Image (cartoon, rainbow, N blue to C red; front, side, top):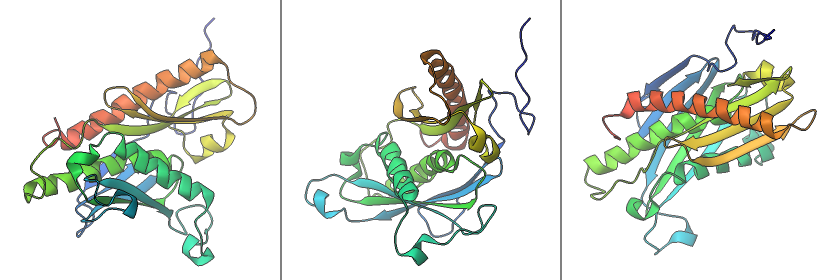
Length: 248
């Protein structure tokens, strides 16, 4: 007799994503911006263009995309101290910032961008799991809008700079069942927790996977990756609906 999959607290099936909402042009002054909501997780993503590059790229004819990430003090159940007050960034923040930057550079042509930097800022205003994944998925939209403005005002005349879509989703195992898009409650009790970043064409940018309680098998890994592919396919479909007329 086939055992039915256990119900999740919010009623989703194991393969289902949380409801996703996107509001572009969310910030008045940024070249690109959006508010992305993934269930109860909400992140403001902005893209700002700066006409210079870091010193290690000066004179090389290449651009740079980098990121900063932060969580508001009451984005969580209890107040967290601002990292600026502590005088240094935490290890988790640094890891996520680098991940966002790597993910966006992976689908961008730095030579066509020219000697300019695009700063991606991700500010978590409400956290319920999957903030790094929401940040990557939303930041892609902000990046595309910022680059479109560079084309529109004649700053860039060659292209395309953006070579593919990119999105991210979390997957994990709870009670022996692989599930997609974990919220905070699920993430805190997962036996396996994984973040997967993929392009629209199905290539991997990064896979972060951890066994929290016991090692996971190759078969379990395959099932998780299958869920991730389906989840990212859905996220890319949402991105295409938003910017399909900008990026074919």
